[in-house]
Length: 463
Image (cartoon, rainbow, N blue to C red; front, side, top):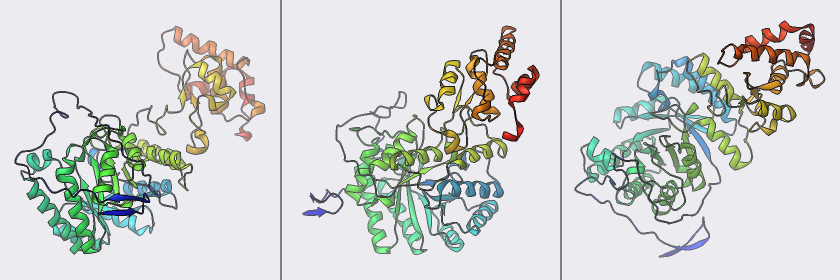
């Protein structure tokens, strides 16, 4: 049968209906995943069209997947962080949802306190075990949507659950029916999707979910979980690793709409952010992330990274408050004693810090030469330099001007006597064997110790 597709405005044939393949033995794709070698990336040269949704958004798993890989947050910490996430996401709810556990007294206290804030965004959702009592629990709390784990690779079905595909298929559908009966919209987490038999299990299973959803008149969301970070964003890559292929396949063969598709990736092969962007480009409205990328093993896709990718793709922040990113980083370090690697984009202490004197010289002329964007405006983080024996006169002059926020008419240059004196003193320290960069307090004391000129440069009333 041929119909006009309202999305493409083209006549298209009805796609082939894939049936569940209940295989006798697990399909482990050993040619792709040999285990004793690096996983392979096969290509079939099949290209699928980009299909950017009208609306895209971010969902957050800081309190679920993020909390599984660190010491549990206190209720107060969860509330504090939730407020920062809401501020970051802005009034349009670009960070659309945040998922919570509900099992402990602390979890429920935090959830209830966050709900009491009355924020429209991010909407609070949960992640629960596939049990009736859990559905009743979230329904009684007033939650409209919950995540349900539906592992879909044979690694999990055969090896972890000790089931056949048909048994897993039937079990999962029975659980989803219980969610519908409780009036809860299920978000089905297709665990280990990038090692699953896409056409032999995933597509027929999702088709059955969509059919149940239509019968219940309750939406079902499909979370595409790249549990092990095997996904790749490359054009022409073959399933099960192809992110474009997975998103296209669920659109084309299972009729899952963009707003019901969400990508959840991990960063085991450094492709977390690239895969999430690819999911957006090829038709998923949602990408699921965690603050600072904190999550299982190598972590999740960082929420702050996708905020920046959103702005890059849309040409606007759509009301997101990116200065909250800096406060989030500070909160994790000061309140949670979490050590952020210095080179971490947007939140690390060195992300907009230059060490080379030649770079500092360029930044004195125009910060844009060596700074990715106006980090002071966008993140409330002015570009900085670290001072060592390689910083040169330019680096020292730049540090003085930025550290003391001197107005243009009072800024020092490379030929100022105070700058030369500081450089001579610093060079002497390194000649004596120093190997570490200069600390802020050391530099302040050095600057103020040399002459009245140094003190006069700092007009406190202008700071």
